[in-house]
Structures are given as C-alpha cells and as structure tokens.
Length: 203
Image (tube, rainbow, N blue to C red; front, side, top):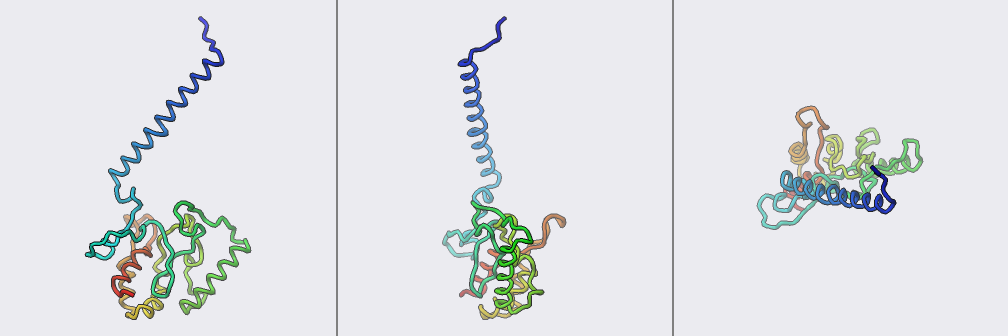
C-alpha cells in the first residue's frame, strides 16, 4: 500500500486541521468559557464594577464609580490616596516598573514621592509605609495596608471637617481580613473607603 501523499494533499490536510482547531479552540472553547464565567460569576465577569446606587445605599441612579478590583487615582486632601502605579492604573497595561532597586530612576521617583508624602501628611520618612512608596507588581492594586491608611487619617479628617475617630471607624469598616485566615494580607480598599467618606461627609 502506498501511504505517501503529494505536497498539495499534505498542505490541504494541514490547513483543514488548523481551521478545525481554530474553530474549536479559538471560537467555541473561548465563547463557552466566557459564557460560563458570566453565568457563574456575573459580578466579576463584568469587571466587579461598583455602581452609584450600591455605593450610596438608596439613591436611584445607576452610575459606575469604579471597580473594587482595579485601582484608580484619587487626589485632593479629602481623599485617601492609593499606591503608585507604573501602569497609570490602566487595566489594559498592567505591569510593574521592572526597575531594579539600584536603578537611579526608581530611587529618584521614590525620593520625590517620599518628600511629597512627608509634606502632605506631616510625617517623617521613617513613618511612611512602604506600600505608599513602592508600586505594586500589577500596577492596578486597589488596596493599601492599614498602616498606609492610618498615616492619612489626620489629613482626611481635617479636609472633611470631621473627627479623626469617625475616619478611624470608617477605615476599620473597610478593612478586609485574610481569606480564611491564611490567604492574602489585611488590606483596605481605597475606592470603598473614599466612597464611604463621600457618604459620611459629602464635599
């Protein structure tokens, strides 16, 4: 028996196989997994967006204010500030800075951030938690440490015209514990904390 195939036969056999795998793996599999994710995890599949109604508990508007899993930039004395981002908080460009600790550019940026935080929060360099200076590996980390929130409490309370005790309680209410007591770190979601501030003491 002759099992040899001509070049054209081999080419079209390979082409048919590639097209079949493209349809199966590139279209059918991707579409089915995406749809399954939407059915099982609809909130996460839509970006974990927090809308205005959920944030304020009662208003009828339905306006997305951000994602609880993606950081965004907050400025001004009346808000808590998040971590630096090498990706400009863009979820389509997640990345760290990829700069070594010895890199002069990283040292310059860290020194500038440290000086700005010392002035803004009226603290010494030794009192600044490392996560307010170092960017996260993803570039879109929505959390800060409780220590990083603690440093900002006095400034936020002054700007909002409320007591530090009220802000301390708000930070405690938005502090997330380790999952099942062992996974992750104790952390504060900056978006939820700032939305809570707007509800407690609107600007």
